[in-house]
Length: 60
Image (cartoon, rainbow, N blue to C red; front, side, top):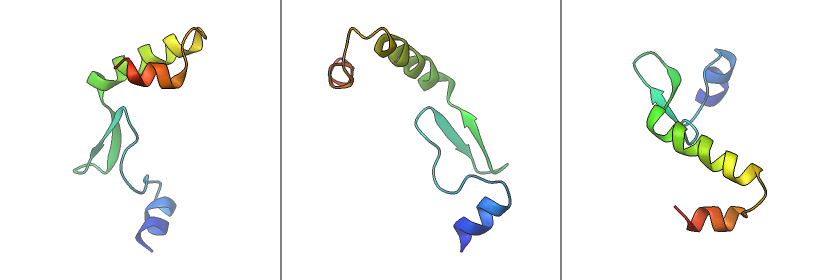
């Protein structure tokens, strides 16, 4: 029931996705600036089509 209550109240139920962090004090999800730069770069590299997801994951 807590998940339904959060959803109806406009909150995201559960943990923040990769690249975001939970702000439990204000009950919001914020961008994790440290990880966001890396995630953006990974999407840019993948979008070029020169590397697969598996290769990208191994190259961390």
